Length: 153
Length: 164
Image 1 (cartoon, rainbow over the protein chains, first blue to last red):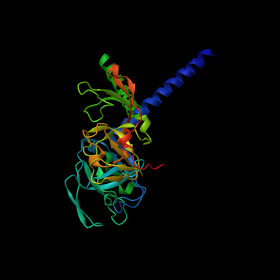
Image 2 (spheres, chains in turn blue, cyan):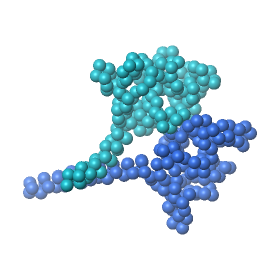
Image 3 (cartoon, rainbow over the protein chains, first blue to last red):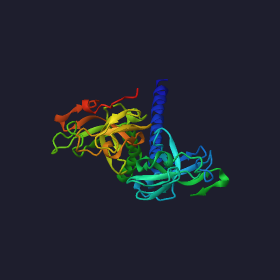
Image 4 (cartoon, each protein chain N blue to C red):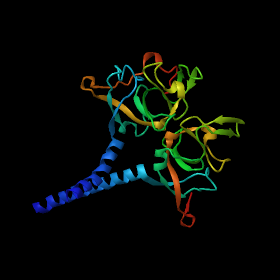
C-alpha cells in the first residue's frame, strides 16, 4: 500500500515536471519564433476579415528587417493590452501625406507608419501618428484559416 | 554518451530558463549617467539592477517607479528612466516643444533623474505603455550599493495636475 502511494506521488511530480517543461517550450516558441493570431474587426478588409487566423513570425521584427507592405501585429499605442493588425506603409524617413490634415509628415527615426487596408474604417497612424517599432510584435506570413483561403502574404 | 546528456539537458533546460527570465525578471547593467544620483552615482563603477518583469505584467506602474523600456527612437536599445506622469496628468516640461503637456491615454511621461544629461520624454515626448519591459526593484551589485530603489518623484518634477 505504502509502495503505491509513493509511486503515485512520484508519478504526479514527474507529470508536473513534464507540464512545466512543455509550457516553457511553448512559451519560447510563441514568444521568439511564431504564433497564431485571430483577427477581429473590419480595419484590414478586404485582405483580412474577422475570424481569419494568421500564422505570424517574431524573427523579422526582432532583427529589424521590416519592409513596406508587411502586415504586422503591434501593441496598440493607446492601450497596451490590445493588439492591432495593420500594414506598414512608411518606414523612418518616408514622407507621408495624411488625407485628414492635408499636411505631409516625415516618419521619425525608430517609428513606422501603419495603416489598415480599409482606410475608411480603420484607427491607425492617421489617428495616433507614427508607431514606435518597439511595439511591433510579429509579422504575418500565412493565413491558415479558413481552409479554402490559405494564402501566404 | 556524455555529449548526448549535455545536449538533452540543454534542450530541456534552456526553455525553462528563458521562460523564467521572461516572466520573473533578470539582472542588467546600467550604463550612462542619466539616472544619477539614484543609479551610477560615480561614473567609474556601474550598478547592476534587478529588473522585475512580473510587476509590469499588467502595465501597472506608479509615479516614481524606475522602469526599463524600449527606446522609442531605437528599438534595439533599452533605456532606464523614472515615471513622472501617468495618463491624464499635466506635466511641466523641460525643453519639449510645448511647455505643458497632457499625457495621452495609454502613455506615460518618463524622465531621468539627472536633469540636463538625459534623453527622455523631454526630447521624444510621452511614451506608450507597451514599450515598458520591466521595473527596476533593487541594486544587486556592487555589494556596497545593495539597496532597493525608492518609488519617489523628485519634489520639483511633480506633475502640475494628477489624474486620479
